[in-house]
Length: 535
Image (cartoon, rainbow, N blue to C red; front, side):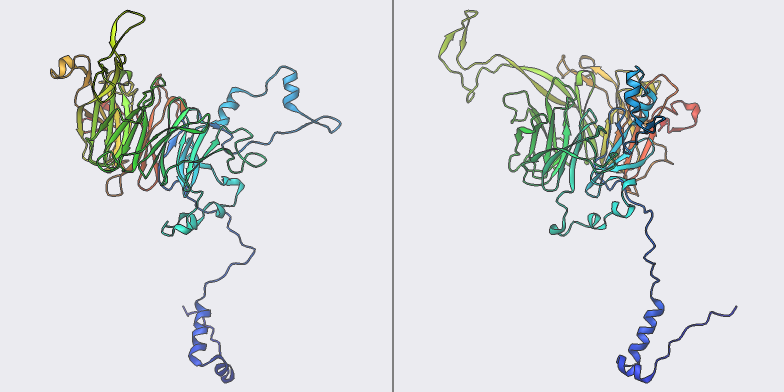
């Protein structure tokens, strides 16, 4: 086969002399031949691959989700014989018939995931795995695909002058799946409404960016905020910063109620906040603060001395990544970190006789009690109770833990477990999700040196492990987070009568893997891993 003829441009001597020499002309000819073809102006980018998640905390809604996640549908207009439009909704309501069915309401509510994406926040449809919209740009269908991905926003943050001041650094979703608190790089707190109403998003049909419901103001932290967590009541939320300080806010009034400044030097001092966790009990306001140096400070906001930690735990030697309460009446406190261990603490209430209130000395002046005629020392207060945390179990997991959740209903899927067992799932640097189980025992039977009124747990044992074929693995970076779904999310319909729960594992390549907790719990299913059930 003969080669295609090559086009050669010949130049006259006058042209060569005017261009500055023969070498320059040859270079220009070579550049013309090697130049990339240019598209016509009539060409345009119709679609492009854009990221939905670029790393950070991922949150799953607690209920059925939000309405109008993909914007609102236009309401069809009904015309009469004369060509006049009739309000269908008003006509049906006058007749006493509601055209909105339960199926349509369920279809309108879609469970969603919140995931950071290049300084913005993506709302991902949890049932389809598709990004429905972003907080700052709106739905993908309402904007060109090229505008959703800004390379300058995804560039390295080496130049402080080029940083996006509105880029989000932390966020938290309230338990009602509606109130969203975000903090930007300039430490300004804003509140959004994700209910899907007409006031939630911009645009005629709600396809635009989310509307700011309220601007709370600057957080008061000296450095960027990296952690925000809501209390289970949805009234209070806490913000943690790189400077080590923590503030508690009242959502109703938009003001700070408490401020915890770390002490300079020593463990529990001026170290960055790595994790915040509230005790999941509406009658308690216990806030746990985990730091990069491995210390954990617990503050009781109902106490008169809330600024002083109830207890400071220093058993971790690396950054604290997870803190959860478990057991009956939340009597166990489980912590994990990047030091490859999981610590379990028993939470007990101890009566404290505070006979002295100032400097530990009793005042000699006495007065008569008006009610009972008893004599009491002036300055005395009534005996109070305080929470006491005792470490009762340490589990070496031999990997840096990045995600840990409690599985309260796992005994439905495992025949050898009971409802009183403590079951947790962990994920970390090894890239394998594992389920651990410990039985609750009475302290009288287990440990003679423990108080008889406290409860304890036996050593944890692994009862389930992710299958090797689906595990992400250690070489690729492991897992960076772990979530638990529930029957309220309606992500999956189960044939059994138990709650269909799943685990969502987030790996280092920003993929989200859904793991089934229900199947493969018997040896006959051929999914056992070294005698343990496979996820």
